[in-house]
Length: 277
Image (cartoon, rainbow, N blue to C red; front, top):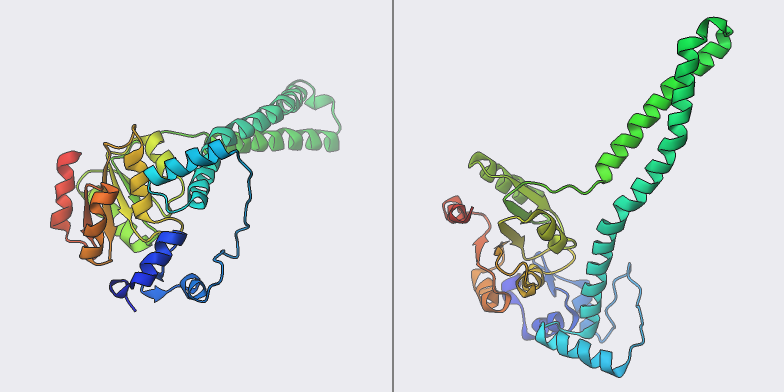
């Protein structure tokens, strides 16, 4: 069964659960369970229950309705994912930085004193002691280099590129990245929906190419999040997908996307993007 054969029942399931009834042309197990009346939970997820005041609940419900979230639980899931993503990027570097700083202080003493001994007293030392101190000095240099490498890896850096590609298909990413590189433009790719907003905020790409069928969250939903954000809504977002043209066009007004490109790509159509770069 293909996505074009989606039934009204499937559309109801997707609206209620925020999950796909069909994934890459195959009816999902979640939809089959839903048809039988079973509750839909993924095996790697646990149910989270929270208690809030009636006032806060009403605020959430109004926000969910305005933001076109299908349920309060979906709003909470998106909020939790966004918060975790933000906290990770804000705290991970501080934590690593604190650890590496704590290591460098004693390492400086070890390296410094072993170097002084080797420079000034090596002729007075027994051979086995000299070898051991020399080994300590060498190992301290190796450790210092490794600490510096870790610090550099963890430090969040702004990257300079024009196009963000969000797709879980490696072949698609390679084809697009090579096409843009040949034309003189830089691109970056990520293979899931998590962290897309944070990536856009950090690096300010001019164009976002967004797959619709991502493994964790629909590209439609990501696009709506971008367009609802006052700081990001002017970003040009284009869907890239193999699903039928008619299905995408039904979502254009709702998502406020700037356009779409169907797979396999017609590269003459992609040239349209260059006038915005």
